[in-house]
Length: 172
Image (cartoon, rainbow, N blue to C red; front, side):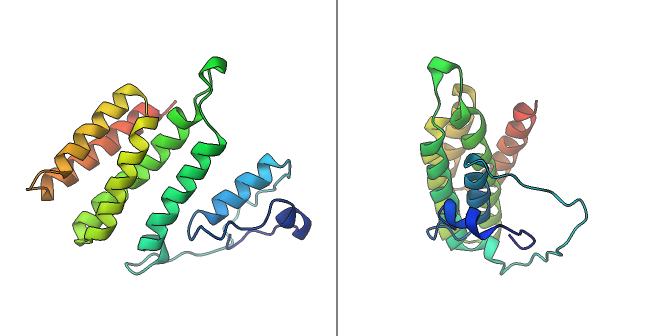
């Protein structure tokens, strides 16, 4: 929310930031504001410069945990409703977070960060049941590869391949 201005009454009406989140707290706040009927304006010009580096908060273990807290929250608030032909969890939420987890897993493997890699794999396992059958099978193959003793390059290549496939198949 570096460049966001939110009216105090709107912020308080939706309960402010979810303090369990350290990352995705802005997505969560803005979605709750939208769902509560508050409107937003968008300014086209950039108002903030962002610098990315290896020690950034967006690459922390805390951010990894926050990602799954937010994913679970969205899955609970927007469940699939097959009787209405609506599948937000299957078609939007789970694929979005799986793509992010695959990218984070690949980065963690490259960096040798076992804890972050394990969190990403656990998140993928948890989200797998929410995917459609085809994506679920591909994800299961990737997770199986991760459990093999020689993970290294095979794991990264598989994660990258699935990420590319999910990108291609999820575009309208």
